View 1 (tube, rainbow, N blue to C red):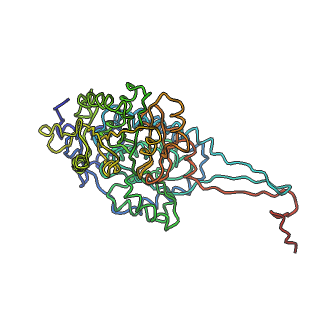
View 2 (cartoon, rainbow, N blue to C red):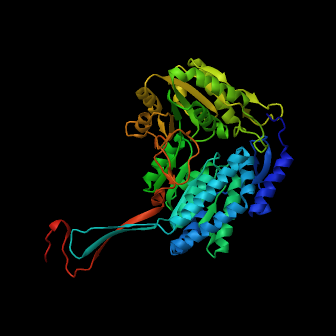
View 3 (cartoon, rainbow, N blue to C red):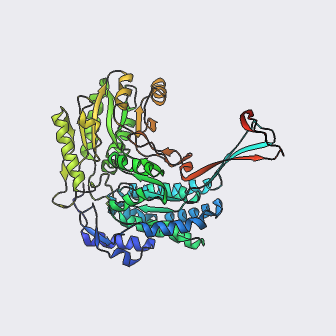
Length: 508
């Protein structure tokens, strides 16, 4: 465990250098709102906040009138260039992710790689925006559906994936013909400025209007403007379930579309036949990765009673030796919590868990407090619980893993499903019948259902999202592109006659 945390001056220099290399102008880094790094809890820069989204929306709408006429493969060529620039500046953007979100280096670089991957996906998609031809009941008629650009897309993203989720939306939206206005987390503005600068460079070099990409920095008031603005045809928001309860109805009230990626309270069932070596690796990454600050973080391990003690012992041993410290240092696996509020949530949840009969097996303690008093480093916590108590049913955005037991597989499925959220789930088993049951309609009710792999680490090829209080939205791969377009059903009559559908006779 490293006790050496870089000072503010060193981190500020690294942040500025990385941002400027990505194309961010120096004046953009000399604003009035300080940017705090969770690495040391101190400022690493300052930015100016926008006072309104109106100007950005006007620019985006004007750009839409041009962008929608650009052939989709040409739009894909812009995204191809963007992917090339992300590859060239992956280390710089990854540095900003680490400094602003607190991710360890490999996870930060992995987030940028996810951006590169979605660019590859979107380039192929730009030649595959397929409609379909349907059989008409009327002779001499053809039925078809076509897909068209929707309009301006608003994106509100969270601190824990400061650029990847924006890229999922933006790569697809742009190839579909839609400009994007992005309100990033106020905790991660430097990564947003850097990513936007690279995309604008790709647009500029390709001879297309840069205004199809807009970023507005500020607090929740700007997000509320995007939610309520009639010019935003699709609002994609990532955040808490509480936020989604407000956003969804407000967008629906103005007959806009919303794509909501909200909370997760994810579980992994560990069956008696499981490969425990594999299960331990999958559980630890899913539960402790990103310091537990992923929507797909594993928060509940539902373990067969016959192997619960053995698995708990193995997890305890790994948890006690996890390297916690500076996320940019080699060998670190667990970085800091984002801020003091996350620290308070973790402490409160552990206290409640004990009050509800739980026992803290390992972790939970604050570390490096002397070396970094303004930052919040915690060893991930493992807690054995007697049942699905209220705290287990709540999502605490911190590295706490609750270990529950079950006796038969139907009980395990019921425990998996007995929470309000429905994002990600997993089962570790070598019993094919159990695996298939978990994947079936009688099994997990989540949007992501895995076998012999943890709940985190989704690939971009599959649609990402969940059910119930997770919001029901889908982003990234598969046919998620349809959310960013409008569908038109076309009937072409080439018969010279005018027969009506359903045999209606309306002769005049």
